[in-house]
Amino acid sequence: MSSALTRRHVFRLWFPLAASWALMGAEGPLFTYFVAHLPEQKVNLAAFGSITFPVALVVEGPIIMLLAASTALCRDWTSYRKVRRFTLVAAATLTALHAAVAFTPLYHFVAGSVIGAPEEVRAPGRLGLQLMLPWTGAIAYRRFLQGLLIRYHASRMVMFGTIVRLAALVSALWLGSRFSDWPGIAVGSFAISCGVVAEALFARWAVGPVLRERLPQLDPDAEPLHRRRFLAFYLPLALTPLITLFIQPAGAAAMSRMPEAALSLAAWQVVHAIVFLTRSTGFALNEVVVAQLDRPGARPALRSFTLMLALATSGALALLALTPLADLLFRGVFGLAPDLARVCRLALLFALAMPAYQALQSWYQGRLVHRGRTRGVTEAVVLYAAVALVGLGAGARWSTVPGIYWALATFTLGGILQTLWLARRARAVA
Image 1: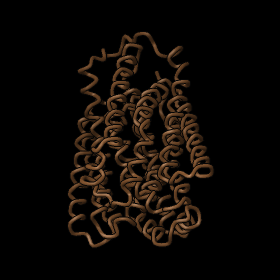
Image 2 (image 1 turned 180 degrees about the horizontal axis):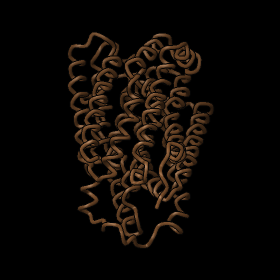
Image 3 (image 1 turned 90 degrees about the vertical axis):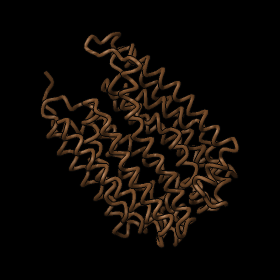
Image 4 (image 1 turned 90 degrees about the horizontal axis):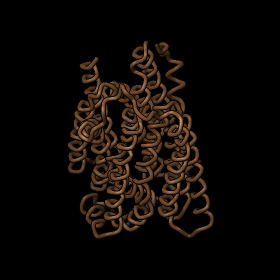
């Protein structure tokens, strides 16, 4: 019989994953730092924040939940092979889609007609997207492998993998900014690709001992993983990030049609990076809940840890937004232009609730995934998307304030309602 789960145990399980997410979250601020110190600061930040990154995120959306699927389903060699086969097919298909957008006339439709990005950011946005071609395949493969590392108690290697990713990113950013004449968008996008490829290669090396020594040939207690069962489990789960990530280009499209579009799009890359960093440790809680909820004492330990994490992360963002730390970061460290720094600081105020509700979402979503009730997760994200799209559409038509303020307020409202729906569904499955 397993021992009772305590907050200390939760922390020990959560910390390596949270460190990995936090290190990954540091990618955005590092990108901003290097690109902001290269020529045409606003154009390159706007191109990445409005085109390159949102489009790349949407393409990778269907595979982002492979970590949770691998953690939950890879219980023996048979299930491992089946999930691996799905991973490789999905990675190849989505990489082909990424190439079609980046290298064919489809790009002009996406960047111009759909997103409506300002003309001056479209060419650099395309270059960035082309240089990020390895992104989806590398992320699919490493998230699949990281699920095995988490399931078989090697989650520390996930953190080390993220350190490898960050080291490759920083090295490429430094070398590109110092020794090449590439524009900022090219230096940054190429560096991000280097980072994810390095992390995927490390994950493959790190999972070797798990495959050789810990993964059983056959788990007699595991339900056979037929294609129908896998798709019934995974498709509702995959819709969650896919629908959410579609909101990224929708937000860029709406901001492109609101006042001060160019300034909002440049600020969006900076603010999104900071907010994601404060939300990142909340993402890590999801896998801990999925893996540990059956242990004695798990529910009160996980619930209290979630509340502490929610208060700490939103508190950290508030400390940055409401003190001189914001000016120190935006003007002193990033070297942003005064008007851009001013917009970024005010925009943070509209996102203060995001880190807190992210931790709560992981708690409720983890409970649903643990019970195999992923439909509630999809319902919640559909609610979020509906609120966000309606709000963004209204802003594009009637807003008289800079688009980034309207967009963040809309996303926050949608996220709060999404959290409340997840809480309702989680209570129903006990």
